[in-house]
Length: 171
Length: 466
Image (tube, rainbow over all chains, first blue to last red; front, side, top):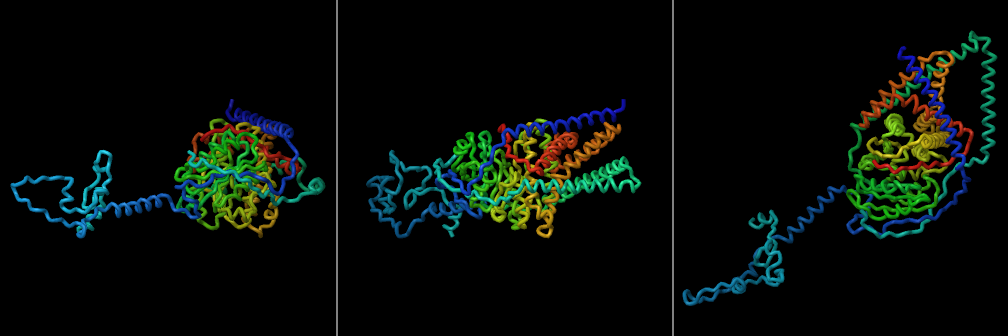
């Protein structure tokens, strides 16, 4: 038997079945829908509703703006700003000529008395004006974060230094 | 993740008014129409019967002649429609690929999510919105008087939620049931954004859907952008056929329309609007069952252009049962016919807006003429086979259509980078699936013209994930 008559018969049967299925399903749908039809009441001109909304924006949430500044640019500018601020604060203080006036060391003579070095009092002996009170102290008496602090004429300062600061310092 | 737990509840009053055409003497008009069209048909039939003996044709040869002419016209229209859509869609894709505006324009967007008895899917929808690749937006959920636990589920989502790039404000409006159009209007009125995105409560957006669609609004002529709707729940023959239909039937036509900036329907699952364009159009109306088609026509009538963004994807649940599908298509067909009827002035008078006239005729053809032609052609081949014994004709008819659909499906699936397996469904797509749809469309058209009352159907959702 040839292929085309077989395929033709299959398609014919399928098409007729589709027709019957579609019409039957539609009639069934209409019958079921008819049961659910209700009378439509007229709508009022105003209706009461309830709006549920958050009280306020979180502190870090920028208020919605009409024109948006793209996020990456915002982050970039913020970090640059912080870095500039940090460099101004953390710049290594330079010894001030007015403050750094070494006092005269009394001559005691060599050999009569052994020269005693006291780390605690040495700066006072040398007339260092920097206040010891500014040093952040821990309970054990050691400066807080002493590992990362640098002892200068103005007390303990963070060792982190702006890279450009050096160039400016020696210019 | 919720950030701010504090919420406040405010009582508000919503404007429920809308312009509804008055049709008080509907029954009288219907009888008048039946009498007029019946009389004209009788006159034409009498003219044929009286003049036929004076021609070389007999009644039998007249029927044969008429059938052959009708078939030739049908084949010509079929091929013209296919190739016109294909060529325009191809031109659009070329234009989109090389001329689409780059990003950088990021206005504040309000996403309006109307929900009605969507307790199973509303949480997934909102979660998909929090993953958006955009950081200047808010979400407004509008609960349209749901009778299930939708309100409770939605209230747990209110607050500032952790979005992908920023915190996203989620608000909820609880209102009495009034239909999707009124729910969307309530959300749009609350919004302070320049752009509003309207979607369905059961849809889920792709991550870059907003970012890609919003860039087209940098063109001040664009009033709305239509997104691309894809079927979420695939894997069954019935839903796979619908997936192919969305790609081949709906999206390709939308691409072709977008080439002339005249998209005729902004789909319900994803549509972005310039708020000014909606305000000028008078918001959504409830007097048709296709509120999206109606609003689109109103926006076009006001001179705005509408674009289609194929990469703004909204995944939606397709009906899994034949009856649900018929219910959906019944509503679509009658809604489109109601919209056409509502804007019939534009259909008749091209001097008002020639773009609208063109698009209305396209809709009229797709909703009314094309289904009738398809059913008539199939009936012709069935009768030719059963009565006259030309059974092989139906095979060649099927083979021709299947080849045409196969080529179109290959093209569309390649363009959209879709699943290749869907191409196989093109063999049964036109002859069986579209035939069912067209029969439903024809029946709905008859009901619409007879003025039979209809209600909004609510599809049962299973709560599928992408």
